Structures are given as C-alpha cells and as structure tokens.
Length: 97
Image (cartoon, rainbow, N blue to C red):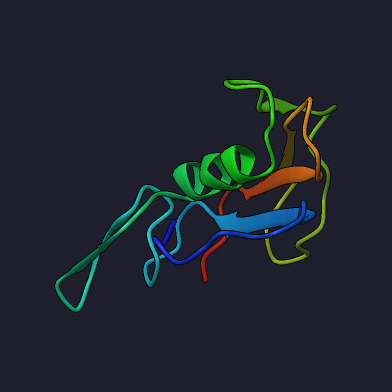
C-alpha cells in the first residue's frame, strides 16, 4: 500500500481479481519497471488499515458462478474477520482482466 494511504476511518473494501489476468498479474509483478503487489497482498494491506485479525482471511462458503464466459462456479469469496471495516477478496478462477 502506498505510503500516503492513511485513512482516518474504516473503509469497506472488496478486491476482485481474475487469476489469469495477463495485464495485472494475480501474483504481483512489475509494470513499466515498477513492482506491484499480489492481489492477496493488497487485500492484506487493507486488512491492516482496517485493524482486522491478522491471518484471518478465509473462504466464506462455496464458490459461486458470476462470469458466464467461465464454466462452473468460478468465484471464491474470502472474508477477513475482526475488522473495523469489512474486507473481502473475490478470486475469479479462470478469468482475465
């Protein structure tokens, strides 16, 4: 998370990312020579800012089907606990940017 991100109150956050995104890699990478974090690291940064219980990000129920172009129940929803503001990560398996 950028050094200038210092919210004065809790912020509800949902990060959504396809795991085969070739523009912004799910696992983090570099873009124009500048490194960027993984989708999970970004979510964990929001967990820290919202005072969530460390290491509490866990899958919340069964995967669901949100993307017609991807076969089956492709979207896993993960939720953090103990947060001042809700933090979720939606991993869209088999989806790109």
